[in-house]
Length: 139
Image (cartoon, one colour):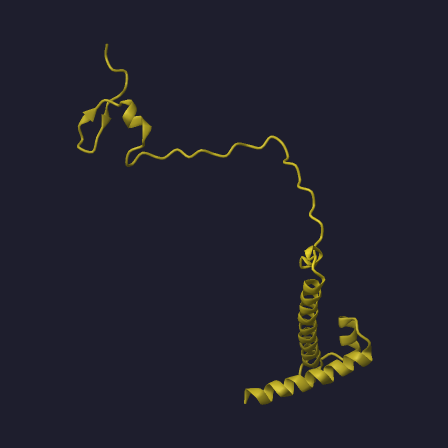
């Protein structure tokens, strides 16, 4: 009975019958068939929302460790708040700079930052002080 498989040409150019060993692994130049992921036919269940955690403090059982860690966080947040306030003051001073064509008044700055006009004026002055200090430090 004749072979029903078409002859396959090898690298030497000679025809050889296609057998099971050749079809198991693709040869050079043969495109690799990629499998696609199966389509989801349902919605996966949503995980239960995790309880809100604050730096994992609620999991600390030892009161000494809890005091140490919470104090450490308090100091870190305090430093971050002070730095943010310095940047607010610098921004307020820059916005109030009369050399700018679009300079803002303390009242306008207060409206933008949700401050009182008096506090905005003090922040502008504080920001000017910080900017002068930066200028002296750069020279």
